[in-house]
Length: 296
Image (cartoon, rainbow, N blue to C red; front, side, top):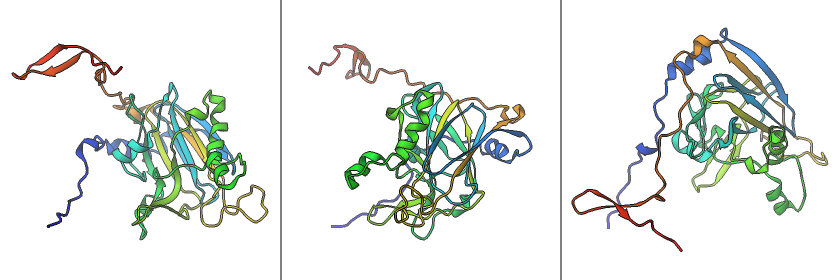
């Protein structure tokens, strides 16, 4: 029996639409045509949430050194629209960088943020197959921690995010899989997920253009830069290795946004098969007279 080698090709139906790279490159390069309107620091063992108006830029920075952070993103006008990690992996990549887009959940399904700059883009793929800015894994949470250790702990990323979004009227049920900024991770030859020490340096940043009005939340990973064991002996919740992260929000000059418009949602107007039943007749026409199928 002959075993046929399958070729690897990108699935066209799941490919992202083309992107105007010149537009986003112009935004990234326009250092004199933007005004920083807000900046703050997210301390270790904490989280912070903030709003970004459409057409603005926000930047996550490493002001003191390498540190991993968990990022969630929602539509500010309807929190049911939020970052869809799985479809972003499918449409873009498992580790985002410049010109990759963050896609939102159904039925909205559109790019809600676009990466305009990444100072770690040159890292690429290392000798272990790892890359930076990870969409493969997700945050630590107190439920799995309780199951594994028998202990309660309130400063894991899931809880940090919940506290951060509470002032915005969001709750635990709004948390979704995260983009892990500055994390270096991959999948080994056995299909196992792994993480490595973050290659981020003091001053590195990942920058996004907000395609719609956004609410964002960032938690500081309790593992710090993942270069060492998580806790120091007897530290009682203090990092062994870790730093705060920074957030900067910029308003762009109107001229930079000429020709840009907020992405529209798909024009699907079907009824998901729940309208009148339709069938193809032998001559190829459609028969809409059949009954609606019943499941009870």
